[in-house]
Image (cartoon, rainbow, N blue to C red; front, side):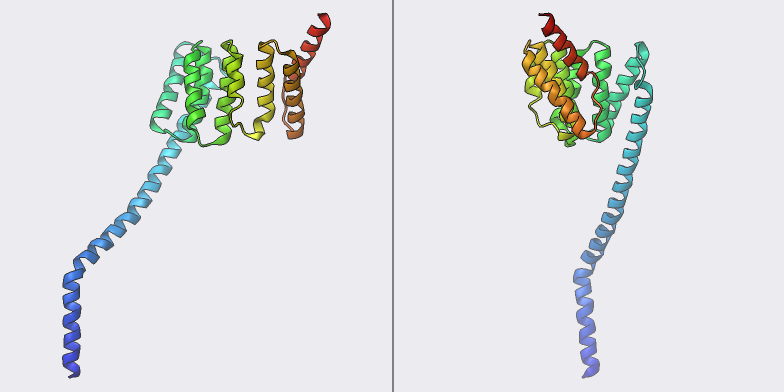
Length: 218
């Protein structure tokens, strides 16, 4: 009876294996493929991040600190397009777009500068980078003689670490509108915030001095 019981158990195992073994092997293969696939995906992402970093550093080396003209300027902007196209949604793509705005301004292409900054401002999940874009858009609005639009942009959610810069640009917008009291208050706020945050903020005191001298002359 014992032998028969063992034979029956063996038959049960064989039958179960026949019915389920194929799916188990397939499942194990899929699991293994998942592990290898995940590792390959991670390696791929790491390679892409490294490639984006290298390309962005090349862009910075070319553009930062240099007043580009002609072919160099065109080359730099082409590098921006490449980084954004191949590494979309990465930090490097967003930083490249911020830099592209400056390059566009050098070409007197303010529309392109606004487009690059707007793309970052509206799509970035990185609060600091997004805030930089809002601030630069506000500065461009003032340059485009649209200080009202600048004030609207400055009401966007800008990170606290850039509050001094925000107040400074707000003062510029009010000054462009001829609102001297509001400009003075904003610039004074900018100086106080910069001091509280231990940030250098150049030029604001000169603007306050000039405003005072202008009002004294009047």
